[in-house]
Picture 1 (cartoon, rainbow, N blue to C red):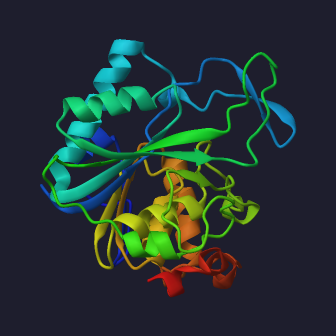
Picture 2 (cartoon, rainbow, N blue to C red; picture 1 turned 45 degrees about the vertical axis):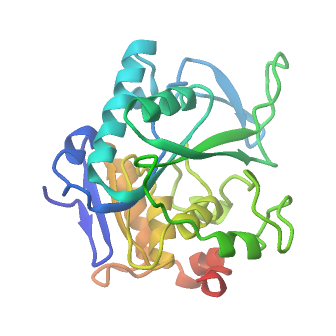
Amino acid sequence: MKPYFKTNKLELYLGDSLSLLEVLPKESIDMIFADPPYNLSNGGFTCQAGKTVSVNKGEWDKSNGLEEDLKFHIAWIKGCRRVLKPNGTIWISGTYHSIYRCGYALELTGYHILNDICWFKPNASPNLSCRYFAASHETLLWARKSKNAKHFFNYKLMRDTIWPGDIIKKDGKQMRSVWAINTPKPDEKKFGKHPTQKPIDLLRRIVLASTTKGQTILDPFTGSSTTGLAAYMCDRKFIGIDKEKKYLDLSIKRFEVLHLNPQKKSRGVKKQELVNLFDTVAAAL
């Protein structure tokens, strides 16, 4: 299994996650963040930057029907279970199109769900049909490998830190399960964007909450690798998998900003521009 891109802390693999999860070393991963297909590419429309755009993201996001979609989620979640360490945890992000199937698959395969997080998007797009409530959140499931596992949770950091842009968290109060975080900033999309790209503020919080320095994080649907950027900036190792070459190439451009590949130029983008997105990490660690 040859990496598509590799540094001392980062590995990207081009291919199907189901196949690659079978050959990664067993129980070698400390934490998994997965943003699987939402299966919502159905020919509809949404609003983006004030314009009407198609919701179709690609063949990879189309539904194959309830039973086949559930089989897919069970398969990749089982694959993640094989590579996850006994005390490791998994995060899964999704909308109502997929997240309930993922939750059911987690329970079927023996995981123990710890929390469901509501990621509230204050700047979410409006609903164009005016026939439904405007969708303004995604659900994050956090689970450990088994009910008796001893998972890591950085409780003190989550309690004591005021996170940028969070309109809900108060100083010295326990972090609640509703996180108010805007969608990705323009700087995070300067090389292009993935249709389901997550904000760096969201992934930074997840990484710091559930891992420690030096641990290894896996994203089986890495896309533009926001998970990898957060992992690297927080001094973790990262493995990302995606079947779309164009998104791995986008990931590499984002990594090059951090000068992770000394043999390639940073394409004129200053490292500080991305480091600014992590202005609280040093104090948090």
